[in-house]
Length: 291
Image (tube, rainbow, N blue to C red; front, side):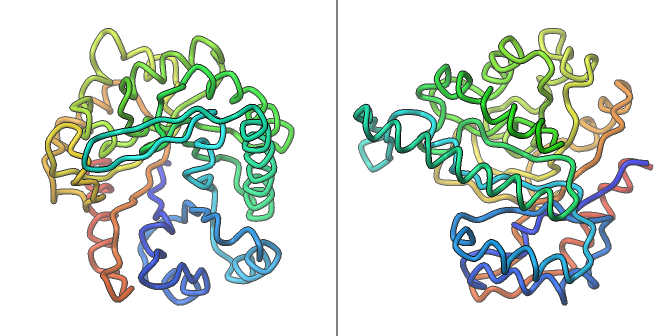
């Protein structure tokens, strides 16, 4: 049976000081089937305490989302954005070696968290945000080391169709597939909509992802901006943007997708208060599409 999970990133963020202890009370109010646990780099220094505390809550956590910016350390470049646009600066050899070493160490910590929580899947950003895919071939090359580590840990590593600014997500996923035919993907509707690609998944050029079972997990989120509107990156609740979920789920059923779903809509306000009702409505809407 397809499960509907809640991303802990929808509940825990800067406004509530990324306090993972909030999960204890919130979990009982959320009508989901479990959680996709979002890892933040700020937790690395207290990883033992994090694991002990969250495990004590007795939550179902089948999926861990690897810390998002980890892949930036693999790119060999530093990139930033200002009013003049995107800028890149190549790392020195010494900086590059240290950056990759740090990435491997931090990825190991993410795997440890997943193992301790009993998770069998991990979502991974092979490119990310501003650093993005400016050196995607390098990231794909180094991904092999991470994938080997994940396999040794018994974790299925799933590459997400993250927004990018050099190429586009579908093109990048195809490159990953060429290098690692056995690797599977997470398809995020908001990320796809950002590039105007949501329904491309069902076009002849790309439907192989579904036909070959490469889409192993779905992030169901909405988006209300224009194509590649970097000033509008909000992750919206289902039905609050312009993703055509009626058509999306109708087409999805035709391919027999049987994987799980995660809702990531940002649910906390500027004071850190979580809108539980909004999230429960999202779970209800997704289950309605599945029914």
